[in-house]
Length: 485
Ligand code: HEM
Image (cartoon, rainbow, N blue to C red; front, top):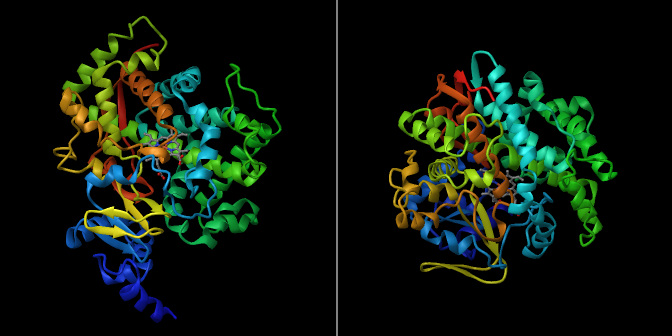
């Protein structure tokens, strides 16, 4: 049977004529090998895809049923508002993995109002008070400070509080939190490859139902991750389900509102469905924004000219006698701060993995190639964000490229860390608010110096869906002076 399938895939399959190695035409296992085995934790598939393009051209067959395109000019043909461009089937039932446009629309409609600009402005007090806590903790820490760790704690805290209320107080116990953050990072590392094996993915999603010794089997981090759910998120969600959660300042509690939504069918509110959403949002909300903030600080601490300029720019809206962080809307009017955050989010990618689309109704044309309906088509936003024909010297941190008037406006088209179209990032505005407020607060309140941090601690190398750098020591700094709030 396997031989017959291989022969079919090679010679008679509708994608048989597409360029690429024979092995990827025959089996998914080649890609899975690079995803699972190669590299530190199996994470080199995206890089290998890039190498294959160098050999075979801009469109290649990377799996029996999938072609990948390396050509930035095609990006907007694939990531847009065309309802026929959908996601592939998935056994993970959360917003991000919803296959069809109709089902996704229904789910997204339930979340969208709470991620609008005005809704995020309403939770600004929560964001600011969490950042105040962050800077207080940083100023109290002795010796070397791992900013990457603290930023992740902060983003975790905000998304949990926003979704479920009941603060986690992660920053009060850094030793305990450090284990927890490591556990979540560990889950990122195994999640992408195991999601391809339905049975393993099923077990992972149901770890909480297994006996403790089995939960512990994969690693201590595995157990810790279960604890994050069992002891942290689950009891909070229980309270939300019972309608008993209360937010201090009367703001909305995202999951409570979601559960109250009468237009959603009951199965969308089931324990499992809501659990998937909560876990997904924690992962998406914590890592991406935390990583981008690490990138911004690393780059700035290497460019003293820019650092001085941006501090001066922040001072124009933040008088030295004012304690409170200026508002998000005030900070986003600062051109240099904005350019720095844009460049940091470009370099930190958001998502490192290829994003797969499928048109189940129509064929999709790329140049002379016609991809029949139902087959997977993917691109990788990393290859757009680091495309040397668009972003000259793509590895260089150059906020200046966003400050060139008309020329910069043209670049906007290729600014895609949050993806584009109907499946773009729902959390974009939350991320922007967090990034503006945090970067301004850290720069205003501290003078810092990098401590043994280099490019390999920061630049994206591994693809665990979200990117990870070569070395995971974090962006480490020493605090030279603190401005008393
Ligand atoms: C710098 C920060 C961030 C970047 C660069 C980023 C990037 C992205 C990208 C590229 C996608 C599309 C993924 C796909 O097509 O599978 C996405 C989706 C998503 N992001 Fe973000 N993200 C960021 C922050 C956040 C935050 C703070 C949240 C908090 C809730 C969040 C929640 C989500 C969700 C729920 C989706 C799925 C949306 C859907 O499918 O409708 N993200 N993000």
